[in-house]
Image (cartoon, rainbow, N blue to C red; front, side, top):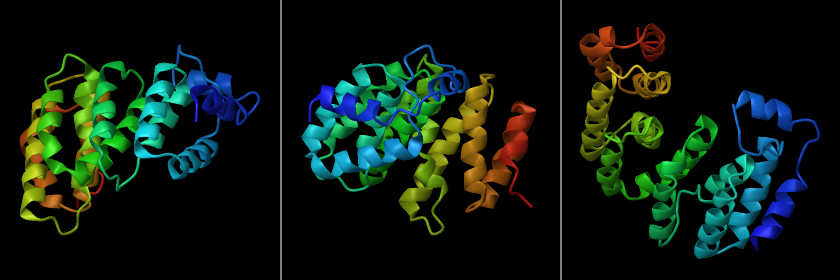
Amino acid sequence: MTLDEALAELRAAIEPGRAEGMSAYHKQSREVLGIPNPALNDITTAWRRSLSVLERVALADALWKTDIFEARIAAAKLLTQARIKGDGPVWDLIVSWLSDLDSWAIADHAMMAAQKRLVAEPSRIDTVEGWTTSDSMWTRRAALVATLPWTKQNFPKPEDLAIRDRVLGWAEGYVDDQEWFIQKAVAWWLRDLSRHDMSRVHDFLEKNGSKMKGFARKEAAKHLT
């Protein structure tokens, strides 16, 4: 599939009158087509089924480089899959996108793809740790969003608990950061973790809660009893 063919398929799914509202909601200066998310899901699911891994990487790269809002989200969706044999090029492409992140919706979709690759190869956490000291707020935030799967295990293995504690250490280093999106990401990680590991969240907030913004502290503690 060529980039032109892919863009034609995306444009055929435009919902008239939707682009302006999406652009305002997502605070976009880039082109927004106005495609509903279910339509993007259907399109990218079909692409994943019909293209090889390397073809998907090539198309995702080309879509991302258009800098069209939905094309970037489609690029991320194209690479979001649990099992991918020979996923090195997929991971490398996702990592290459970090410097372009500037919007929560695009960033979250890109990091959903990253989550799958991290679960498939947890040693990549070493790379993610480097993101935590980036000058880019979006890259620092990405470290927490990409590691969200480690908040969700009911029966974590010792190596999973080690990663959980490692990421909590990163979060502890973030609590003095007053960026709203960073505070929100810390709260998100803690809130999700509290459903499965309440004691760790309680201990984190006992130590660090006073440094967090009020909204973040409240969200992090949402499920604590």
